[in-house]
Length: 173
Image 1 (tube, rainbow, N blue to C red):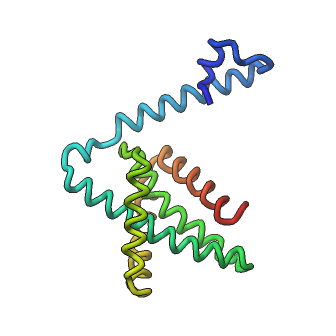
Image 2: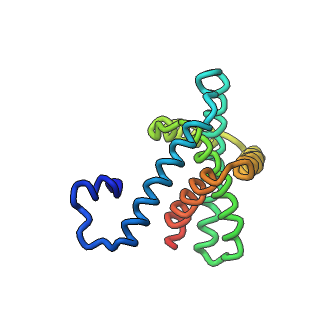
């Protein structure tokens, strides 16, 4: 979707009310400001220490994969009628999305690379025992919850969007 200001310039806003135009213009400004804030306040960590950035990237992929497996199992139970697990499912999705949102706001935007790392982590986790996998999932959920608690408004908005999209995909809500 083109930015509202661009569409206005191109004359593509026929039938739009003044209030809608003001709202779209405000949204454009907010999105641009939030993007600028993310760029200004994101730490250049990956540039300063590539080895630590790579380790963090691998840990995030491990956690996203582990929490995805856990959320998939919980979603099957929720779809099967155990609706009391829905809050736990959302908490697990929040923790997993916190890793994704954190990486995104740190400037890691290569989705294909991130997907490849997650797929490799999922393959490696198939060799883990159930106890080891459950331990990894517990640690990852704690770390994701910590990341979410430390995130700012923009980070929480990114996580919320990711969780809603994933929840819809899992449950069809």
